[in-house]
Length: 149
Image (cartoon, rainbow, N blue to C red):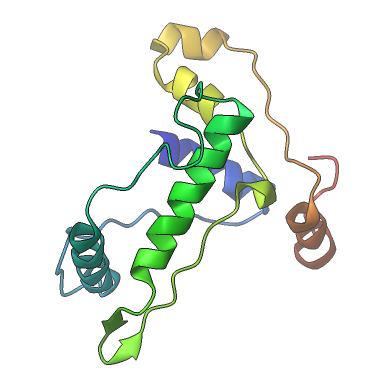
């Protein structure tokens, strides 16, 4: 459901004519070549073993800065464990995604909305707004996105 909501949001935000959701079979699918790379990545992660979620701070409450530092350290370890692996004879370059460049960052609200009954969804008055960041400014300038969306 969240994917469908996000697709409609992007359709409206980017003023597109149509958005299509496609799904392929998981793992070594002939139609989804990316899944083959995922199998190599999963193998490398399995060889590494368990990642330490308390590398910097032994005790950190979820959501606080210490917890975020632990999660960033663990994410770095995941990226480091993927460095040096190859797929098809070529190196895989793992990159760390960054949430600070998201245009919409209301994932928790979307999860809550997904748990509503149909009646609650119809009565919901929640609004969402894009974050004013570099990605948003790029989309306004180059894609013609309405800056007052």
